Image (cartoon, rainbow, N blue to C red; front, side, top):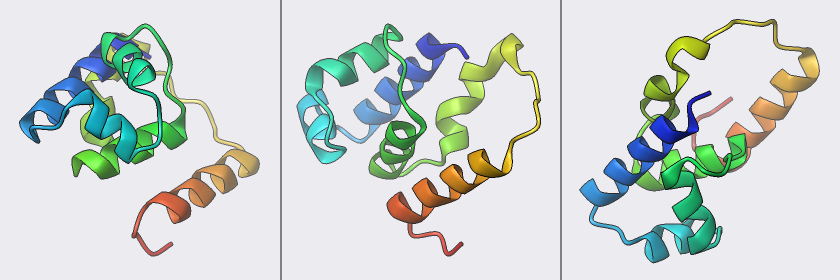
Length: 98
């Protein structure tokens, strides 16, 4: 995954919403420093953090991830355990009925 592209998309969306890093970080319960690292692509964000970012920025996860996939897009089967974890996170942090 191209974390630099993901970070650029997060920064662009944050600025479009006129949010500071402090405000956004506080809203999604991460440190301002960590958000800065995400925006620069120097640290990896967990799936849970990406879901929180997408919700706070009012964008779909695909809007944050699409440019970050680039050439590294390789499909691998997802295990039942991984699907269960994804569904649990989506239930916890979205209003989508699952």
